[in-house]
Amino acid sequence: VQLQASGGGLVQPGESLTLSCAASGFTWDYYAIGWFRQAPGKEREGVSCFQSGDSSTYYADSVKGRFTISRDNAKKTVYLQMNSLKPEDTGVYYCARADAGYGCYGGRRSSLYEYDYWGQGTQVTVSS
Image (cartoon, rainbow, N blue to C red):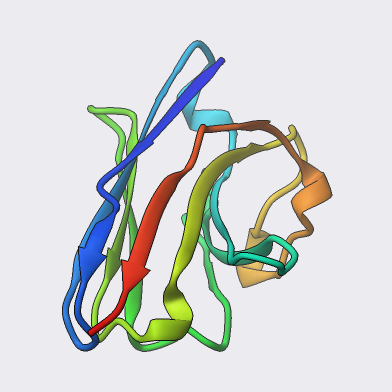
């Protein structure tokens, strides 16, 4: 199982970025993919999730209305479109695969402990 996150960078407040998470090595249709972030000195937190099967999505309150998660099944890639970025969005962003039977069914919030494989992370810095 491999997850490759990319697309991070340095942007100014109000700008946009799109993160990608390319997956391989497992049956794509069976698992949810989540995005998490970790700021310096803070715990890793869930940002968004896309659930296979029912295509449910989850967004943390702090990103609702600004971030959009999507999934390209042909490319086995999950995207996180981030608009109106704020300095508090700064951090390392990780994508992860939820363990079988876990994820964001019905839009539920899932714990990071429900995820068994993690990508390497991509840095997002929002600063003027």
